[in-house]
Image: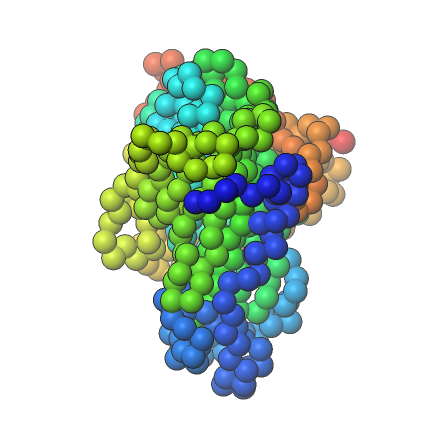
Length: 456
């Protein structure tokens, strides 16, 4: 592990910047002139610098599809393509971005442990391990569907958690989420910023994540590292997240800084995470080490960051077993999220599970999925025209836009706040004996039901 980075004393954003300097430093192999394409960068995470041309021939694309997609996309190089490009359903998975937000709840027991823990530094060990745990699922190479404005996702029947997420803005695409159980509340405003580089995509999480531990009211703030999606068109797509993750205890000033190693030649360093838990005086207290696709461990350390004599490295989190050869690289929990088994009573008609394009893709009907996706997008444009013609302004149902604008390493963020109305809605539904039981799968998808509530 070695001595902790003395640059940590320079503060929060200095630490983030030091991680960003490594973001573009993964190995690049440019296949100049490959099939007539100039400057295509292809990276085999298990290979060396001489196999780029062979790797470029691999991947999920048929040659004619790949060629057509490249001709469409190369003009966007250097641009943020978050919502400006219509993408083929071939590269999608049957899940939306707001469903994917719920995947952070798989190992929510770690937040329960953090709430129960009296040691302030071990709280950060548990909580930061929870934040790392989702990266195993996030390495999937399929793109989630962009939610329709007003679309929601609800999750119940997992760890006593109530989870609600809503698409609160279309341009720019923004989502807000809230989860709660007896131990913690989780609140997130999520906005992605991207940079398309031709055969790769840099993704910057311009978001704010807050966790409140209920026993003592401790508030934790999370800033994750950026992500790089490699080999989008040429070669086998894979994901890496080089950079720093910082979780700060806003109540005490303690923090944990974990560095995600970039992938090197022949996979060297891939998945590895190392760092420290620091007290408010930026003195290291606990070292942490592991791999984000396997497990995380911790050990008490001295002021130089070296393990304390007589102490042992102890595992705090280990990834759960995953299905073998799953078509979309889903975990068991991802299947659970997508199923109606986690749907609450009287599912909202705006729920992602009900999207006809998602359902068609889940059944393997790409043609129908593409047609349904186009139909939903056109309906969204028509609804916007009608709303603007009437002078109405879209207002989210479960979240309110605040006056707060918070800085992030990648730009300022307008913050949305959970308004508590979903909890009231669920209480009425769950306590009512008069609500008729219906087959939730028969509900017609309708995120537009509440889109004209607020008029200017």
